[in-house]
Image (cartoon, rainbow, N blue to C red; front, top):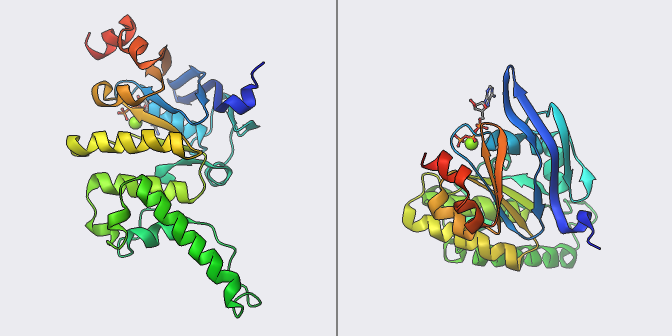
Length: 255
Ligand SMILES: Nc1ncnc2c1ncn2[C@@H]1O[C@H](COP(=O)(O)OP(=O)(O)OP(=O)(O)O)[C@@H](O)[C@H]1O
Ligand SMILES: [Mg+2]
């Protein structure tokens, strides 16, 4: 018997979001497997961003449920969803431009705080600081930024900045990271790198990715499972091959 709570990090049941007369998200039910790279695709205006915003508390749902890591988080405010470990990258404050890549990652890690009792006892915090730096380097290695650890954030390219966002999400201890069009506006040569890093991370790290994308060509091969939305509704789901050959999907993308 499978336990749905442990197998799926995110489950939505008939999630609905209206803007006046427009039903931007119409009864959408999805299941995201732990440690998967699950893709949500669909043409412009399909409702992908609205769906993720409704899951992460940026928008209040008009109906349905959001279950994250076995907990009903429907209608939770964004900071609470974020603290629970469901992170939408734009929720993380923009990188500190003048700080280095490493400093930015360290700033995203939670710490036990300055205490007047602990402060004079160096061995207590020096160990903790060392462990943090080690962990930060481990993260940077996994996103191809280790050689850029001492570069200020403002000097990074667009694709590297995306990977810094992912690094900072990992540093917060996120269990589920939603990436809204991470390869949008990124040099096509680097777009494949981003997807490769993300794909490898979900195998090595205890993290799951929900990737929103409308570019079917580049992103689809990296997905474990794909959902397709059109005009607010889920119109297809399955493995990348199945979805790519689905007549409804072909119709909205080519027809
Ligand atoms: N705050 C809002 N108020 C009113 N309508 C909105 C709002 N946000 C989105 N919409 C509408 O909801 C629909 C879904 O938009 P959404 O941004 O979720 O689509 P999307 O799939 O993310 O598209 P894209 O690929 O262009 O990012 C669109 O018709 C959009 O105009
Ligand atoms: Mg969008």
